[in-house]
Image 1: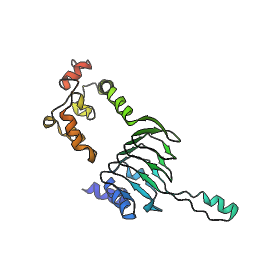
Image 2: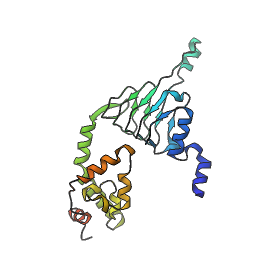
Image 3: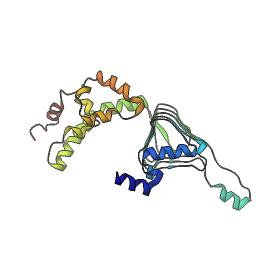
Image 4: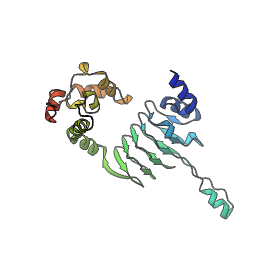
Length: 237
């Protein structure tokens, strides 16, 4: 409690995602339910014209993200030509969008729903639904379906690497809770899940019921965690 109070005093509206969302909404930014700012202290949403910003539901906005509705480039024009020429445009972000670290969303951009934006991406033009974009300027590298299949195809390989590197680093077999994003490989009974895995199942508000249904149909690759460790050749360690 004391730590939370101190944090609130120091960081004020940026002390947590909840407080930052509330502050932005009070300013006039439209934000849908379930949207989370993972690093509010390092995130900048342009509130010089907050009514120009709309962010949908269940978006994940990571540290270092900048969302702009204006620029001050007209200051250079003013000095040369004397005129004041405004430069401000809306930004619209759809539902279920992940914005990677240190990405920048420029004025005038509309981002569709179900979009993954890679780290350090600069979004300069509209992005359609159901795609993955990266780069400066942002470019579409695959559809969401292709990204989904890619992630499915590397689950075992990545999980094995995690276990082996954990053992190399700490000289012990990791507790299965370390595999908090890979437990579908060896679990398929929701009622028997440990609290860590259940917490993961509750992430992203709009997905919880669908995840429960999918998990009920999950065809796990291994009988249990011990079977997975044997696959990793770690059962005797």
